[in-house]
Amino acid sequence: MSSTVLRTPVRLLVVLLASVALLAGLSTGPAAPAAEAASSTGSKAVAAAATRAGMPYVWGATGPRSFDCSGLTQWSFKQAGKSLPRTAAQQRSAVRRVLTRDARVGDLIFFHNSSGHVYHVGIYAGNRQLWDAPKPGRVVSKRTIWTKSGLSWGRV
Image 1 (spheres, rainbow, N blue to C red):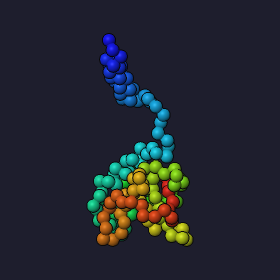
Image 2: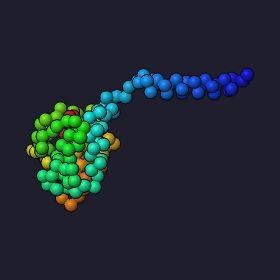
Image 3: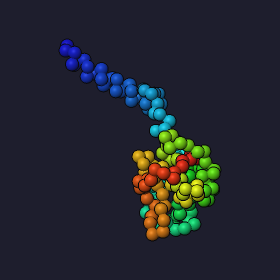
Image 4: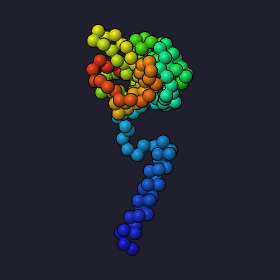
């Protein structure tokens, strides 16, 4: 028998064993770095926010058919089983702060002015994207983070 004929069944066996190990919850390699892994709560909040895409911004609204920025984050995390205070500033005070380099999908991203006043919040979706309810006349959407300054991050 040639070695090529033997390699194909061996490859199939390796793939089959790796698949069974993954299904059984066994690791076949190193875990993803913490900075890249999304928390279960954060992933659920991102998924909840995505279900509200296209809903209008209304100042003071907390859902489920219209939102302001902190109303969307509050509602999304409630769907994930976590409670958050009502305003963006209150939410910033209530979460565990994380560094930008440690941000994960599902973390809250806060926008603040030079005096530190928090004026906006969204849910990090990865790849410099966030889910938010931006302002009057706009709708809940996933969009690119438009700045690198005046940001802080928090984990629920």
